[in-house]
Image 1 (cartoon, chains in turn purple, green):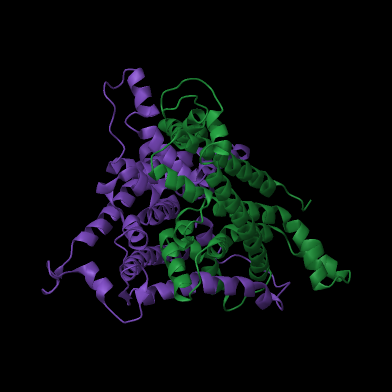
Image 2 (cartoon, chains in turn brown, cyan):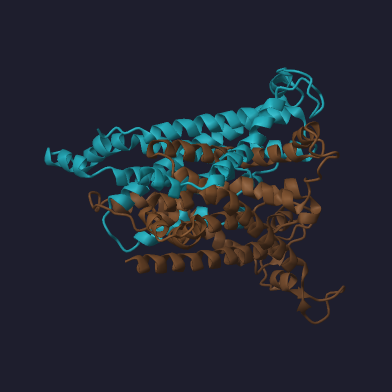
Length: 309
Length: 269
């Protein structure tokens, strides 16, 4: 995702100009059929009628969106008043993803800055150290987190043995556990773009500020931060977007009270609730939300590039 | 002046936060690795070193299930990585060496689509797609879904590498009467190898590690390692899960490390 935004307008030569249609054909075909067509089909399914044992009946229906947005009373025959159940789940997801993003920013920014100011030859190694855990199975990382944080887990054992706490901290199945899990899942996405931005930053600007008696904090806040803002925004989006639709962290670390969009969607296709059109509609709403965020981001980036020259 | 400049760049607490960051990232993995060697039947009571849970994975009551799941995982990952890397290599050549063309931005958008759509949405969409065309869920559906999902992961390192190779090498070959096909297979492809290997390994890990998409598109009774692990965790965590996790973790780390060093190597000199 990080590189996706960056290499869109990259340089190109025309050595294989004549063959380019054939070179790109396999990717087009595969992605048209396995990425684009499925999303289109999902949109269609969200307007179909549900089949009770999973799947759909091919009859046009607004029922899925109606269920999402409208509360029609216990017997389903009243007028539409706004339905809060699913909105609450979406809102909780946005809130959790936002908190995880802030946590990642608070830890990720200093880390990225620290790495970018190391000598040039050791920077790739630091970046590598930060990214290794990302490539470890997300499921295993989340399970590891669950194991570590349990009431009788190693973290509580450790804290009790050094006498910092008397009784175990109850972390698992709280909002904080989910935020910690999301932070842990996507932290490299925060560090990498900020690192790239700070690495390009011209430190003589900070020197100039210091020469003019700016404090260190002022230099950081008023000079460095505006200069690396695109990197910070990119990092925030790259953490926020996957957190929003995450399934494993809320499912394994959050428990039933901390239900998020991902679990709501999963339930429609796996569990007994089984309502495919509703699951498709919820996915469409999530996808629209993500696309709006990405569009705003793309426009901002374009503006920033224009401003730079 | 040098010392002053150093001073401007350094913020006291940042080093500490970086170290904290590393601790948070690695602590869970290290703890699980250590406890996978625990001799105890219980999850957290430490009773000394032992390989019993590794033995349990290979010959315990659940070993048949895990072996089948491991076989599926590796077969799927190899096929998905080979196919997606081939597709990505061709596509990267078309994108980086294909001149300017109208569909370029659109093509790039299509290639990176799986990265922008939340994974759970991809999972739902793929499941619905297979359902709508009457394709029975099984190993094949997992393979197809993984191929699409792995393409951007293979594409990014490959195209990054290709952008770093000047086309003068291929030009020279063509000046010496090599055909375009020869210039591609004999010159560009070998130069591209580090990028291709790196892309292949990343695609392999992404496929091997995927849980969400696999969980949606797998047929009943078909398990890969992540879905088998998830199933076991849901029934209550046992120490053998930590042994499997440690092995899988080892595979991922080894592959990423190889990918890192291969992509750093420079064979254009």
